[in-house]
Amino acid sequence: MAANTGVIEGQDLILYIEVEGVPTPIAHSTQHTLEPSVETRDRVSKDTGKWKNKVAGLLDWKAGCDALACYDGFSYATLFGLMISRQPVTLKLAGRDAVDSNDNWTPEQAGDTYFEGEAIISSLPKTAPNNADATFSVSFEGTGELTAKTVAV
Image 1 (cartoon, rainbow, N blue to C red):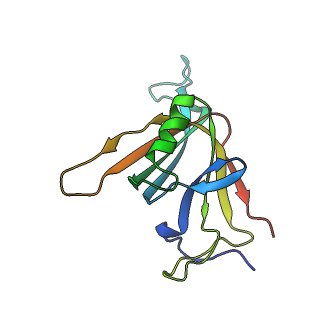
Image 2 (cartoon, rainbow, N blue to C red):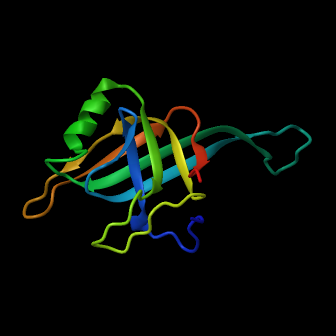
């Protein structure tokens, strides 16, 4: 099959955490973020005049996920255990691996691009309002390279 084309629908992307070599989606997620960035630093001398010159410095990245709190699946409790282990986890932001017959999701295809890297869970707030669904957010800080990869043919 050929790579997907057109606009990417948000529900088609999933944030996976690798568990024993298997990419596992965070259960009941509602939103994901991926934020690569580059630090800049000033490069000025007596010859640069009144305008600053900038140069690119170190690369960095962050990721995050909002989800409904649940009792099953890859839950808040599972993420809490990973956070207190203080060990990096492998993250993968990619398309769905299969079509769900109950919805109109676009599965990942050979040639599609996904992002993968090691990260540390840096924050895990949980919210439980009265008469509403309990939710949580998880924040990840990349440790090392974030890599753009292509789904194999």
